[in-house]
Length: 143
Image 1 (cartoon, rainbow, N blue to C red):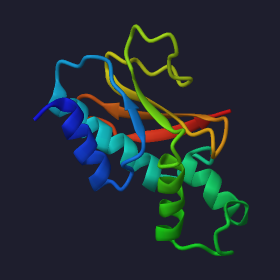
Image 2 (cartoon, rainbow, N blue to C red):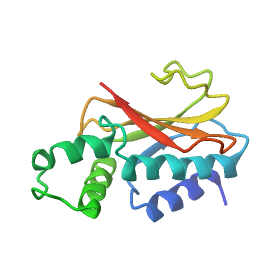
Image 3 (cartoon, helix red, strand yellow):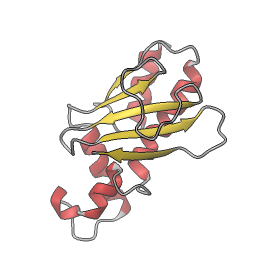
Image 4 (cartoon, helix red, strand yellow):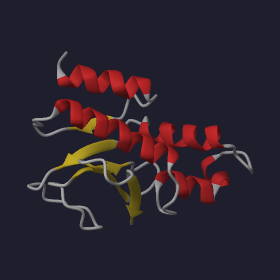
């Protein structure tokens, strides 16, 4: 199966079929797809960084038309809604990319993804996936 079909299938499975994914040529397609899944899952489920997409929505749910005390599913679905808004884009960053992660992570050692969701915020969100699986995947936002 072609890489784009595999990406589309993964996006459907993660319930973000309308998220645009920009991928430069990759040599390790299986590793890339695992990293893509880890990155998207991190954006949806991990609010450790208060500037993460989930962290922003969790901090002020009423600003996003959510109930006063939304449960985990409601918060995660709100992140998915922004990912599916039609203007959101996830980009794989390579050592040659003009924009590099604000945390200084090395794209040779990590799969680095940049998420832009203008309908949520002008933040840049980064997901960092260790290519050697030594560290947990994490994400953070920078305004």
